[in-house]
Amino acid sequence: MSSVLITGANRGIGLELTRQFLKAGDQVFACCRSPEQATELSAIADKNLTLLKLDVTSETDLKTIQKQLLNTPLDIVINSAGVVGPGQELSEMTYADWQRVMQTNVAGPAMLTQALLDNLRAGQDRKLMYLSSGLASIATNTSGGQLVYRASKTAVNSLVKSLSIELADEQFTVAALDPGWVKTDMGGPNATTSAEDSARGLISRIRELTPSESGCFVNYRGESREW
Image (cartoon, rainbow, N blue to C red):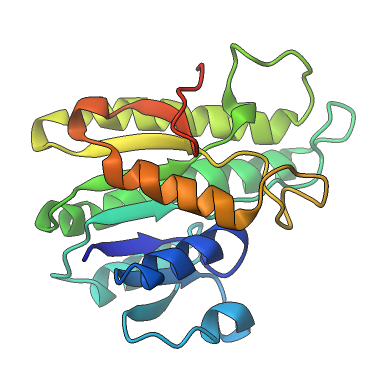
C-alpha cells in the first residue's frame, strides 16, 4: 500500500486518480480548495481517504498542510491542480491572467514540493509527479494559441527537470506526465480520452517509474514526449 497525496482531487483527473488509488487499497490524502463543496469527493466512503483543504496559491494553506502532515510519510505526491484561465490569446491576455495561471500551475506545485519534501523523504517511493500537457512541448508546437497555459506547462516541465537533478542523490523519481486530451471541465466535450482511461494509464506509469528515469516527460500510455 502506498501513501498518496493528490491536489485538485475534487474534479476531473484528480478525482479519478483518487478513486482508482483507493480502489487499489492505497492511502489517499485528497486535497482541494473547498472540501465542503466537493460533493463527488465527499461522497466517497473509504477508510483510507483523508480530505484536506488546500489552495496551492495560499501560503496559509501550505503551512497548515505541513502541520497536519507532520511526521506523516508520503510515497507519492501528484500535482494535479491546475487552471487554464481566460485571456489565452495574444489579443485578450492580461497581467492578471498570467499571474493567476502561473501562480496556480507553476508556483503552487513548486511551493507544495518545498512544503512536503520531508514527508517524501520519510516515505518509501519518493515520487514527485506533475501533471503537464502535450501543449507544454515546444518541439511539437505547430499551431500556437493557448499562450498562457502553454507557457505555464512548459515551466512545469522545466521545474521537473531541475528537481530531478537536485534530488537525484536522494533517489527521488520526478516526472512530468501528459494525461492526454481528457474529457473534463478543462478538456471539454470534444476531448478524445476519458478520465478513467487517463487515470488508469497515469497510475501505471507512476508505479513503474524508477529513479533512473527521473526527469522524464511521458504520456499516460507510457510514450516519451518531446520537450
